[in-house]
Image (cartoon, rainbow, N blue to C red; front, side, top):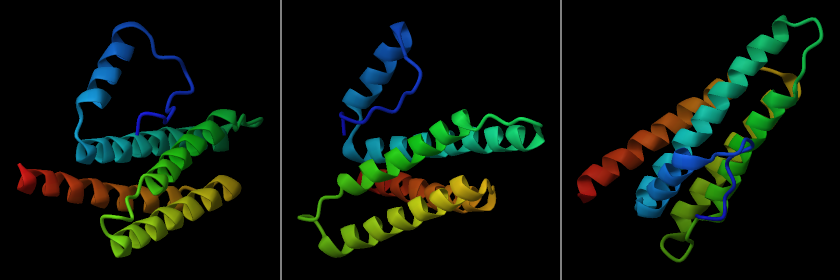
Length: 139
């Protein structure tokens, strides 16, 4: 999972070292939780940008599009990281769920609507909580 570029703005200095350390020392399950959290953060920022632009006479949608694109990139990375050798049925279900989320985000992006974003955030939060619970049981 180290080949995913999640920053549109450069991270430098101590922040970069900290992030690199977090990723390098995280377990695979922790990385999944971090990706869910990152995706939710991008969607939160996109939603803020959506509200801001709807109030503007001449909106600039570039930040909104970038944030939505980052969330979609995380979901694509999660799909690409599925290990079908472990459980084909589970991976097929997760692939479909991630695809459903990406479809909702594409609709939100095209129509500039909040509800599809909210729906995806609910799913991501449920997944994150499930993975966190699994990590507790594994510990």
